[in-house]
Length: 230
Ligand SMILES: *Cc1c(COP(=O)(O)O)cnc(C)c1O
Image (cartoon, rainbow, N blue to C red):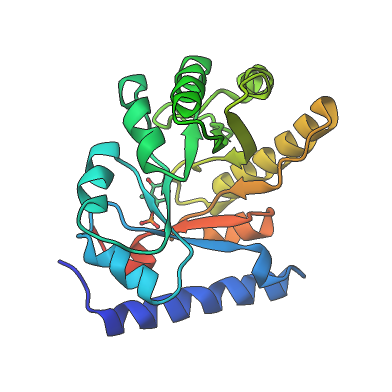
């Protein structure tokens, strides 16, 4: 069931208010936190709604689903892939998405670099790291992040903009906070050892946005709080 535009507008307003409130409580400027509208498993209208309300970007988690929707909506938004990507879909992903947030292994990185090269473009990516050490989540192990970044820095058609994580689902919200703080610490460490800047920290969803913003998120990926349950 898809909500109507008026409801979406209300939801978006209240999500933005929450972001502003959390930012105030920790002395951050709300403009530092991008709100990525996650439209996965919702009809193409969800993307049209987001574009109409001025969202700069939408997130999808499946390549095939995104391909179908992209042929149906002509919305002026950036498309970001936030879900697990199989190497055999890398070529299609490179042609569809403006940024891929879920790069978590060297083999995938090399495939993306090759296809981006064929399209003569530089593909912005985030490296997904499983800082919550959750066996049910994708993402490079924290200990493997440095070698993944090193490989990425050698890819001429890849530009690493930052890191992404998905926190473990846990009633105890300090579990998510710890995973987010680890991602930020890892980012700082990698910037120091590789002398690069990795400004983007994509972390936080409908249920753990507050912890993520407190830990330094620059991109919250929000689905159900905007579009209702899936
Ligand atoms: C679905 C999804 C989200 C959004 O989740 P909500 O709880 O609906 O806000 C964020 N990030 C990723 C990677 C997702 O797959």
